[in-house]
Image (cartoon, rainbow, N blue to C red):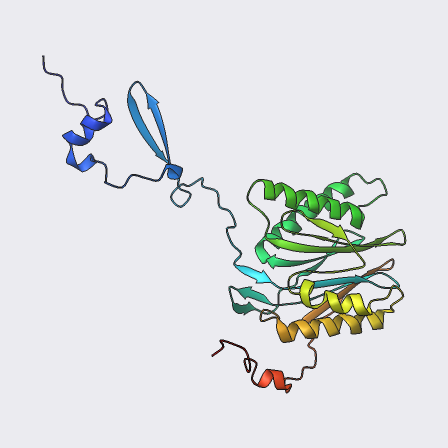
Amino acid sequence: MLVPFNYYTVPPRQRALANPKHRPCSAPLPLERRAIHRANGMEMVAVKDSAISENGTERTLYPYVTGTSVIGMKYKDGVILAADMGGSYGSTLRYKSVERIKHIGKHSLLGASGEISDFQEILRYLDELILYDNMWDDGNSLGPKEVHNYLTRVMYNRRNKFNPLWNSLVLGGVKNGQKYLGMVGMIGTHFEDNHVATGFGNHLARPILRAEWREDLSFEEAVKLLEKCLLVLLYRDRSAINKFQIAKITEEGVTISQPYALKTYWGFSAFQNPSKGVEGSW
C-alpha cells in the first residue's frame, strides 16, 4: 500500500533526499548557534543567533566610546576629583563634551573611565538605589562607603555573568566629617586610599601624587597638584584632551567646575622628534 508523501512526517534524512530544495548545506550551523530537539524520531533545529533572533541578548565584547583617566584625592576639607571630557570612538576623539564626574545622592561623587554607555547604565542603577533609599524617609541617607560597597557587588556580579560593565570607577565623598575615597575595577577589584587614579593615571599620575600629596593640602594646593597630573596625562595619553572638569565634595556640598583648558607648551626638544634614538623606529 502506498503512503502519500508528507514533508512534515518524513524523517529529516529522507526529507532532504526527496526534495533537493531542502537538502542541508555542506557546512552545518556551529553548535553554539543551534539547538537540536528530538521527539518521535524527528529533528527540529532552532537557531539561537542573537543577530536574527528578536529576543537575542547582546553583551559588551569590547568598548566602543571610552573615556580616559580619572584622578581623585583627599585634601584638608574633603575629596576632589578631576577628569577630561573626551570620548574616544576607538582611537578617534569623537566626542569632546562628555561629563564623567557625577554627583551621587547627598554625600558622594563618582568618576568613571571606560565605556560611556556602561557608565550611563551604572548611573541608572544608582538613581534607583538612591530613590529606594529616599523612599524609606527615615532621616538617614547612603554615604560614600555604602555606595562604594554597592558598586563592588554590581561590578563583581556582572563579571561573574561574563558580561562586565567596562569601567573603572572612582568614588569619593564626605559624611559626618569622615572623608572617603575608593576605586572599583571592571571585575570588582576594589580598594581605598588617600589618592587614586584610573587608566594611564595609574602609571603617570600616581607617582606624582605619592611624592607630593599631603593630608593638609588646601583646596588651591590640591587643584594645583591635580592640574600638574592632568598636564602630564595630556602630554602622554593620546586619548586625553585639553578640556577638564574638577569637582569637590565637602560637608557643605558638591561643586563641579565648568570645563576649562590648561596652558600647554609643546616646544620641548623631546616633542620635536619623539622617535629620535629609538631603536627600530621609522
